[in-house]
Image 1 (cartoon, rainbow, N blue to C red):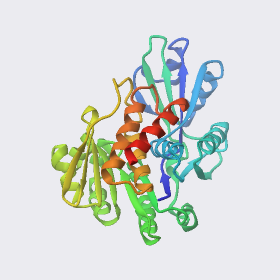
Image 2: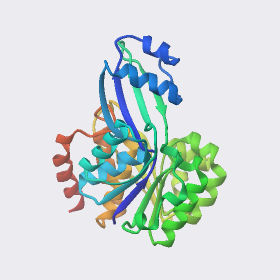
Image 3: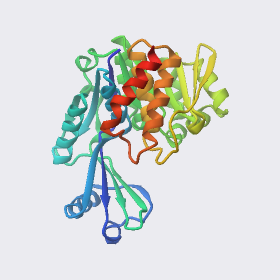
Image 4: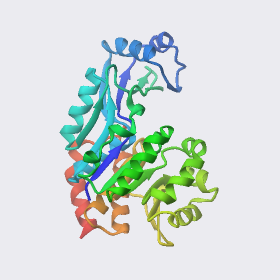
Length: 325
């Protein structure tokens, strides 16, 4: 099952600040997580030229497609980027991971999520979406979709209702399975009506964490996963260090968490989805697929950031093969 992802194309940039002066210059409060405008983004980019900086291709769905590709799956990614060096970097990073990119490019600067790390270690996050959420339904062609059997969409795109609805409809007409991640409980609360419509009509595989599932159903995780499994083929609810719950056709089973002490939970849900969808792509059972998801989530929480280090993948593949045996 080849899988294509549709999401916000954002480069994650980690900047180590020499002092907190940059935060004052761009008008950001230390420790905040803010959406910023283009002029603020330009100031950050100017200030970063002299700072220690690391970049990684980011965005929830991109993280998932990269991890799947690194396991050996055939994946693609649809996103919108600008014509700057950040956009070029994004393209090259995906190519290097083995993800087929279907980028729509537009004049200007690409979206990015910049983590400004103060000398005392506190993090201030500035997200500039740029062109990322402005994809139009007609920019997603049947030709793009027809090479795949599954499309994975992030809930953050629900702000663009026409895009999500039209793409899901198009995908179903072409015979693709539709997987959706609820992304954030604020998204669930803001777009409940839309979700209540599209989930039973288009979605086959639904990913959520405990707070998203509870926000949507008003029930605890155990009850939520069962309720959601009546609307979709497979519902998956991650429950942190307790692992995950999988519901399908009225049956619910629990998958234990994998991995050691959580250092940073960024990207845990993205990697759980990657493992599960990878399992499904190679014909694994639901339980095996969810165990691969748990394995990847267990690895990502042991590092800072949303990428598993390159030297870990061979060991991960061996563990995946033992789950599949």
